[in-house]
Amino acid sequence: MTVKIAFMGAGSTVFARNVIGDCMCSEALRDSVFALYDIDAARLEESRTILEAMRSVLGGYGRIECYLGVENRRKALAGASFVVNAIQVGGYDPATIIDFEIPKKYGLRQTIADTLGIGGIMRALRTIPVMEDFAGDMEEVCPDALLLNYTNPMAMLSGYMQRYTGVKTVGLCHSVQVCSKDLLTFVGMEDRLEGRKELIAGINHMAWLLEIRDRDGNDLYPEIKSRIAAKIADPEFKDKVRFDYIRNFGYYCTESSEHNAEYNGFYIKSRYPELIDRYNIPLDEYPRRCINQIESWKKEYAELLETGVKTHERSREYASHIMESVVTGTPYQIGGNVLNTGHLISNLPEEACVEVPCLVNGRGINPCRVGALPVVCAAMNMTNINVQLLTIEAARTHKLEHVYQAAMLDPHTGSELDIDTIKKMVDELIAAHGDYLPKFH
Image 1 (cartoon, rainbow, N blue to C red):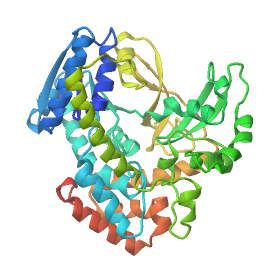
Image 2: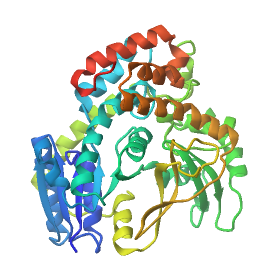
Image 3: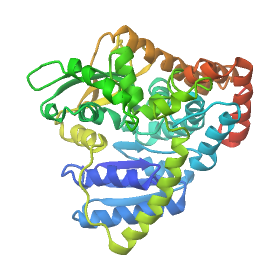
């Protein structure tokens, strides 16, 4: 049986190249039909060109099909076994620019703004309607497909799909795979990497490294904690927020410090501007990153057209390994974003989307029960889950009050602005996003 893999948002060429290139490196997946879908003709053509060249280099297996525009979306999805979601509704210009510039007028500064905060809320509200359309099509033309969601805000989008659609959905992030490796490397304990054992659980971008042991089962946290003060004092060190988490909460978390700087009310504070330098917090980082990536891709694409695609080595992304595991039945473990059904994490709500170890096999995604998080870790997660659940509520009901409430309860926004200012900022953001958002009442 030929496997069909639909890639939604295939104009994300670098990411499509990694995920589909990974599939082409798998004997179980290389003969697949790769259905590329996007609403941008130029970006879709770039992806087709690169992937056809890569397919040729890797042996010419499989087939690439392209589907442009909403009118061809159902055809792209029809009969798919797996659907990869990597869309960015509104793109850098205008949506990301709006998410940063309007809050800045009100004195609210952000770093990434794609997961939480007012930027994450807006991104979810403009993305959920599109994913709901995907779900409607999938339920009709590929009802048994597994949706692999890579788009942020991960917990809000995956949680909505898991609660309110019939689509089998798992959210996937890059940060779980590298969490303990980065930590041990940062503190000069690379000799403990091989054979290490770990347990990671929580929510996306704030899942906690609950246990880290060496190959012999020795707890590595005491030695790690003895080394963090020097790193926090180092003016050049970039991961200070997460190291401050270890110092104050006892545990390291999965996503970077530039992300976590805006998931709380501790580090980006107008009354304490000195914290920005002390913790090396890169304000407006995501817009800079977008501009650099756009320019970098233009250059890389020109070079690829001139010199050709050399080869592809399988990346650390989970997607191809999950598909391979489902197709072959060979077990594989991931850190997946799933609904907290049956209280996989016992001290977080069931309707939350949590990130926990999952076993993948021929039956699909099988989440593992973790039990209770340390109280402080659960408390930190809840400050984010509150915003996620209210944003999902706003997307479900289209009630403006829920958008206001999500913004009011966001830790960073609420620590900087009063309620009336928050509401005014939300109103301006909604107006600026125009047709990218549903109508709220």
